[in-house]
Image (cartoon, rainbow, N blue to C red):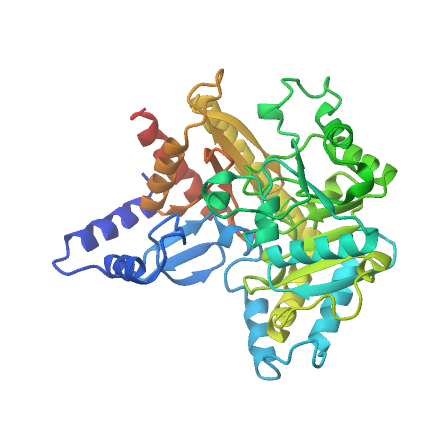
Length: 455
């Protein structure tokens, strides 16, 4: 065990031996008393501070962060340029509401987003508070432009927890159960989940057969003339970090163009360098009509955006779009600082390097443990899927939860994912150092060694 792990265990033991209630237990008791059970928590961690790729809890214990605020902290916790932007803007203007009076950070930011987003055509942009709000507005814009109601999404998708976002999201428990009825005119096709191909085919001999499900949908379920847009993640996030094979997104885009259907790329989790490109859709060469952003856009502050074709964005009538807090001045100033950091060759190179190192280590673990059925992802958005047997591929969500707990107890925060809850995903800040990666790998090695002996 590394020195870091020794120190972490000693601190845990010291607190456990104390004759007074530990602050951690106190926070847990307060949580149970005050928060509804529907607000889940992967770990009992109560964070006092964060820096770069590390979190420090209220006891002073430090953890390597492989969660990154579920993808909100690509530039790291409390990145100095981000903190400086917050301080500077807070002295000038905290809020005014862009519908009452515009302010320079809002205009500066939409101009930057128009400049860096996919597509060389004329574009416009609007700012909101979150990824779910970006999804909701994109659907409104698409319906206004096409004068059609239908929306197509994919199995395994996650597009938020608002009613429309949840209608597009594709996982019953815990997200959808008990919250219906959902919005009508939502239609779903399989994603290119090669490890669990719904058609029992193999890439590349399949020629991305699954993409043709979109055309079959128009024959068996709904007319293409009733579909406004396809909303899709270039790599599934909550759905298990499933990266589609080459040709999949390209084929879907081709079908959309044939039928006058808008292509909406949900880059909420995949954007801002996470996959080694500024936006994940760039790996395919596909240019969306609308691109959705949030999470790491503002370095941890709530901010989302819809950016796309000017003629499409202009479709809703005046007053048809809006958000009281969307484009808050402090969040906008922060996002400008974030873009200065991420839209560079060095940052994206580092993201790819981090991804290669994580993928390589996950593959080494896979060679040692049949428990790991698949290692996949793009850039620094890498995951491993855990199964009872590589042949049957039976999911083991309980083992996944045990590994998450074992990692936490040893100083690594890591998250589960996947429609079956059996995927371990890595979302570290892209400022993570080599030594921090090695510490994280040491934790994973020990956690797998301990857990594997129990099953």
